Image 1: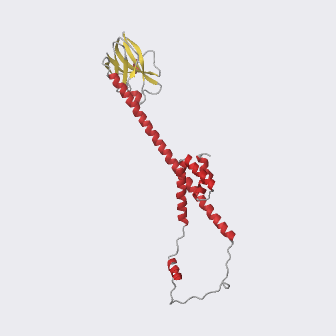
Image 2: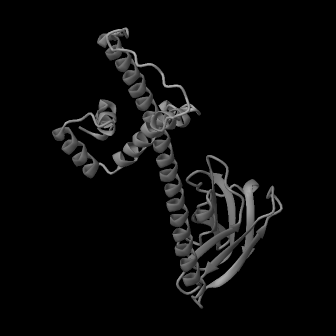
Length: 272
């Protein structure tokens, strides 16, 4: 049996009430060892049973103590009550079936209340466990994001450490709809090229930024630029290896890029 089947069987309620056999007690204890979560459910049942017993407790009358002491230590000055022969006292016979029926009803009501209370506490515990798991998942995501950012900063530091790279500021073009700036890092000797879209707005859906190198007066595709998330947006990205460039520019093109730049969508540009 799995944990859900054990809880729904009702044997835990009988175990708490002391109505299980020795074999059933051993089985329940084995389940508690195999399913530690059942201990929380069992604790809830025990607490519910204690609350039920307290709710049914009968408070003795205020004069019970006086009556008890009066019987144990009768006052000699008081008149002694006459002794009534047993034969003259009427005998009241109780119907045992009525007592059994009443006891069964009380037991049934008590067990029903225990089961309902236990299920309520089990549902609450399940909600608390789900909330704890969700919080743990959020914390794991935060830690993963921080690790990714650390890796990106490490990558950026490695790029900046290359003394042969020339930083080129790509400033806002007149046709750009918003203020934007990007940084290109280029090694003239090897042609190694990086792009940092540090202040480029996120590309709209179905669109993507494309880097162009001006070589011999003609635009040459230098690669696509990733934007859209914090990590991708601020990551220094490796572009195509190009030599003999005199300037660089970024245009907004369809997703995947274009063969020629759309000059009406020119965002930033800068000379070497």
